[in-house]
Image 1 (cartoon, rainbow, N blue to C red):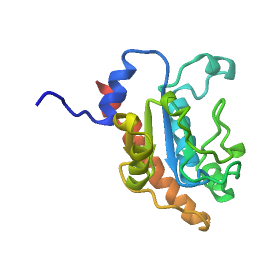
Image 2 (spheres, rainbow, N blue to C red):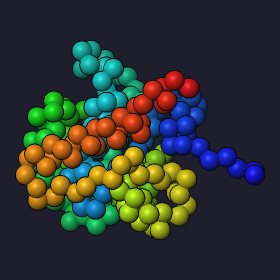
Image 3 (cartoon, one colour):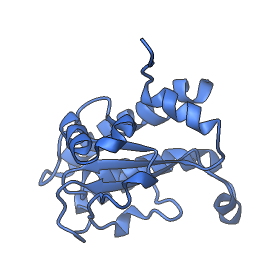
Image 4 (cartoon, rainbow, N blue to C red):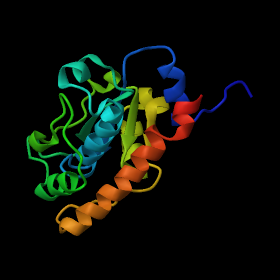
Length: 184
C-alpha cells in the first residue's frame, strides 16, 4: 500500500507545524443561517480562548490556531442568521471574535472561486460532505463531516437551538481542538 490515510486532526497538526497562519476552515450546511454560522462562531471563540483577558490591541496581533468561516449549499443569499441561533450563542456566552461577528452574518454559498482558500471543509452532516465532494472533487482530501450528524434546528424553538449548539460545540471541540490536535 503506497498511501496512508490520515485523520483530519492529523492533517491539521501536520499543517500547523509548517506555518504560523491559522488553519482556515469552512463549515457547510444547507442554508447557512443556523448550523454552519453557529459552528463558525464556536470555532472562532475556541481559537481565541487563549487570548481572553488580553487587551484588544494585543489580541489583534496574535494568530489563533483556527480561523473559521461558513457557507451554505443552497442558501437564500443575504438571509440573516436565525434569531434563535444568535440567542443560543449569546446564552452560551459565545462572544463575536475580531472579524467574525455572527450577529451580522448573512447567508451565502460556497463558491468554486473561493473553495481553494480553505484548509478544511466541514459538512454538518455526511450528506453535506458528500455534496461537497461531488461539487469539488479536487478538494476531496480536505472534506470531512462533523463527528456526529448535526440535525437542522431550522424553525425550532430556542431549546432546539440550544441543543443543536451543544452538539456543535462538542463536535467542533473533538474535530479541531481535541488533545490529539494539540499534542503531536
